[in-house]
Length: 179
Ligand code: HEC
Ligand code: HEC
Ligand code: HEC
Ligand code: HEC
Ligand code: HEC
Image (spheres, protein in one colour):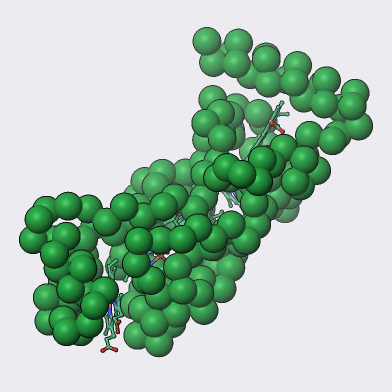
């Protein structure tokens, strides 16, 4: 099954080469009306105005305090309300957005954050080996500390992954990154 998928991908690759590599030109495969994983600057509206600048910048809360999956799994993880309420049971409780958080928390309802990054399903990306190799979050996510809600910074295109893998002597065989 896996071999077959890779074979199909290789055929796609060959045919895209025949068409002059247009498949990996930024923008070409992107439908602007839908969310996708290939748009630098993608910055969807979120249910509340969470600020990375305030929390990670000014207050210097470590990225991995909230995104605590990054060093041990594929997903960095969006923090559950529990993480927020660790502080916001006491901090800024009189502010509107915190009242909203508290209401959701008391009703046991999650905040429905909109996904920003979204690689296609045929790609395998896992945070763990990258974080353990001491590549900083900023290398791939840019100056997140200066942003409000998150926006996509890196292109997340195949060429971007491969360039760094080559530089760092990491495998670039197709099945390293593809199912
Ligand atoms: C080598 C590049 C790279 C590094 C280093 C990296 N990320 Fe990511 N991150 C990505 C990619 C690629 C995605 C999109 C994954 C997908 O769509 O499947 C992503 C997705 C995410 C997401 C959303 C989805 C998820 O995984 O839960 C969060 C949150 C995140 N990264 C936070 C971090 C934090 C915090 C760090 C540092 C501890 C970090 N990342 C380090 C490349 C990186
Ligand atoms: C380690 C403590 C800590 C954690 C965890 C934390 N915050 Fe905060 N948050 C703060 C502090 C400190 C402020 C600034 C309060 C002030 O200026 O009065 C703040 C301010 C805010 C504000 C602005 C309130 C306003 O209108 O002035 C929002 C919104 C907010 N946090 C949301 C969240 C969310 C959502 C989470 C979880 C994903 C979270 N916070 C997790 C400490 C924390
Ligand atoms: C207080 C908790 C908190 C801290 C600290 C924090 N984040 Fe986040 N992060 C969130 C929340 C909540 C979201 C979802 C809302 C949004 O997209 O901004 C998020 C979203 C993200 C996303 C986009 C996820 C997606 O949907 O693809 C990335 C990337 C990210 N954070 C990186 C970082 C980095 C890098 C740092 C450290 C510089 C950091 N975060 C620090 C709470 C936090
Ligand atoms: C800034 C450099 C950098 C970027 C960008 C990068 N990687 Fe990596 N990647 C690494 C390093 C370094 C390792 C190896 C760590 C180690 O030796 O354990 C690695 C390891 C991996 C592994 C595990 C390989 C294995 O043999 O276990 C996968 C899968 C992977 N990367 C996929 C991706 C994908 C997909 C992207 C793009 C979305 C990407 N990487 C972007 C540097 C990078
Ligand atoms: C280091 C990670 C990495 C390696 C190695 C890798 N790819 Fe990819 N590939 C990606 C990522 C990420 C995407 C999705 C983003 C994009 O389309 O550029 C992708 C997308 C693709 C696509 C879809 C292109 C499109 O426009 O829809 C094909 C086909 C493909 N890869 C084939 C291959 C083949 C064949 C190999 C081996 C020669 C390979 N890839 C090796 C990361 C990788």
